[in-house]
Image (tube, rainbow, N blue to C red):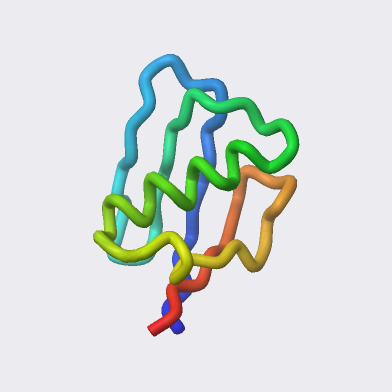
Length: 74
């Protein structure tokens, strides 16, 4: 399992993904952080960027925080 560290920026007017290092990302999304919609959008964006299935990514820490930790299963 690989840990990925994400800083989320919800309600962004310019959605984009910035890769700071191999396992650290800043993700700007237009989605609001209501009912976990922003978390799901972060998983969608990261899965597309890494070219893996969304089911391989799991949010393990930071459900209600801007600082998140996700695990990428092998």
